[in-house]
Length: 337
Image (cartoon, rainbow, N blue to C red):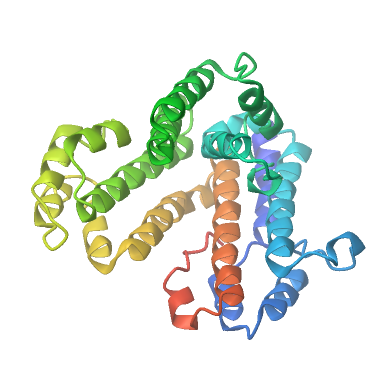
């Protein structure tokens, strides 16, 4: 897109940002009495809650919510397509969905039941049907080379070890490697920032969980993505000096990195740390509100939309599972709007 096109697209997106959910509205959702009350509030905000659609009447509440989230993601991409923005410009945001679908395809193939609902159907770089069919037929020629090689390796490992956890680790690491690579190759700071924070946060999460379950060096080497911002050897060495009651060696290492802010959140627990990771991305993209000549504000809008969908999903899940309001509030992400 030309600079003139970006100026036009960003101006249109600025108008769309008015409808993004605010922190105040999110608090209203948290305080809502029931799932139905949440859906009414969202409908009044223009969300696709399925009101007046007979084909959704027979669905349970969880399925209705899933349809809503899918429709909202579709809406985001349709808005960008109308502005002439190529969806491929945001591939770095979609890579994790592709690898989720690879996991889903392997699970689907190993079962006699229909698992169509476990696939992510929007926001992908590879159509989910293509991944599902490739795994079913064990013909990966239609997939991107890296994914094709991975799929073959994972199925071979599953055949020889019957270890589903190992296969998940292989896919998760490949997804992180692909996200980081795409970020490094991106021409925009927001895309690079997203990749860096996403992968670093995932690596630290693996380390924290690994310490709790007394994982060894081989596990970490197989599970962690090697990125410039974290020294893999030092990170693993620090983890191996920790135990579930003493994380100080890890904290000492993180203190030397740009992720020192994670320390206080890890001490609170994984829920707080995961929230911190998401909030870091939103906090750092907010300056894009004031730029108008690059893809940055459009990328920030996409991330803002994904963040609010994730947050609404957390709230809806809380309502459906009768979680206390306080427990839901602790998981609420900072809004972009």
